[in-house]
Length: 116
Length: 108
Image: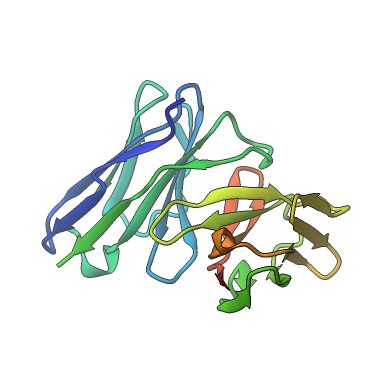
């Protein structure tokens, strides 16, 4: 079946512009996660959705970052007034449910964001 | 202090060799443990979960030491296709904390 998909796969933008990243999770997965991976570093947790609610936004780096999820499906991560330090790969993952920490998270291919 | 720390490597080994590496984690309340594999410019994929009693999956053996808060991965009979970055992952409820990864290169 289809896995997690993300778009765009690559995005180059100018400093100060807004960008919107999209994630389509695996159908039926209620939990959705956004991570950021800077070059040579581990994944940083950004936000977690259970259904359409985001009980944990603690990883969002600043108020320039926001995310929403609709229809218990598609999620968008928006970065306003992008800065060069926002350059990274943004990864989305989904899992069937959550709370136990035992479930496999399936990752999308990521969006490579470059802010010039 | 990082939540999960790994030796970045690289570990450069010949085909057929055994390679082992580990990671340490800081949160003693962590509940779940995994090894993920990440190929160059690709997304992470689950390699195996790690259980307290230790577990094997083919040529891969994982161990967990809760007292010392470290997790190990051993790869036997290395294949060229094992070349990748291996991510140590620790979970607490829904939240996963990732190490920066250990790079393994298997040469012919």
